[in-house]
Length: 306
Ligand SMILES: [Ca+2]
Image (tube, rainbow, N blue to C red):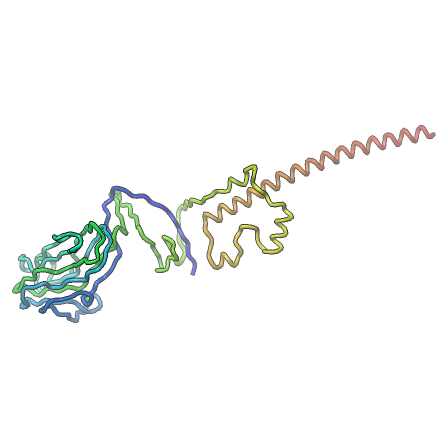
């Protein structure tokens, strides 16, 4: 499985913070009072729902699940339907409560059948809740069922995690959690894509960048040492081996910095070699001059001998 990772940091402020993605609580994870029953319903999540018949007594419809939540903003969705949407009288009150967070409900919504566009059709109701401190007893309830109006059904609760998704006024979205596309295993990265990804432009912050190669105290390996390393390892020093890349992939930013470092080292080698060539060329010129002088001297000697 190949992953392309994009790591970016995005700062949002002054946004309305609401949660997305979270935990579902189906009817079997909540508690009911007498008169509320679990019924089969093909249109319901996992084929089951809670029903409180219009003939059931006035009481709490459902309650629970007494779970722990960190302080923050949450959205809690309830999926409900009614057997008849005619009445505009209250039939139930949805509320969110925590003893640890205070004595009054964190938020509530009074439900009337007329709030449903159609009878016998599921509708999502959402309560935005701010939990001021960490709690371990969050209770979500369908309170004060009123008999004699119609049957009321509950399918599930969806509690969306705190501040995971932030939507700014400009429509920008920040996700304060890991995101997997085509995978749920992000391997500790903020974003994992199981498959390819197409970008118009990608900017990666890669630090440290390789300018330090040109510092006066940088130790440039002698080429003989590099040669020895290549013979031994079959790849350049500090460059990952084919096996490592196969196993772990490469970090785009780190790899760019490493490649630049190698280019900078090559530049230093080339500069040094050019200096050597110049030195040899000068020496060669000197030798040629000496040779000319020697030839001239030889000619003079020959003349004297004659
Ligand atoms: Ca259900």
